[in-house]
Length: 111
Image (cartoon, rainbow, N blue to C red):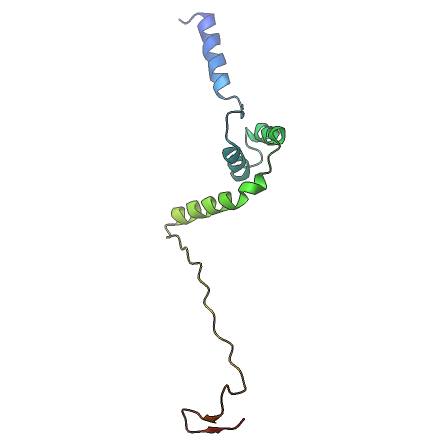
């Protein structure tokens, strides 16, 4: 059987592994985890305290976090990511003619 000290040491090491020390976490990862995990998460309070102590504004990372989460959701759905940034537009059609003369249908257009 294990002596009592060995059981105590194993218990303390196990509990220390579950500690919520967030000081070694990067600013981005801290904000990412805070944004993507539920508010009742075990480490949520420690993350919020660390963000406050560092004076971070996680909104600086919001666009990047949103883009990564969208890409993950698309991947899970089995969709391909579309990076279409072009704008397709239809030119405005005017009622008045741009020119005077005869159009392609043989109709005389007067100005």
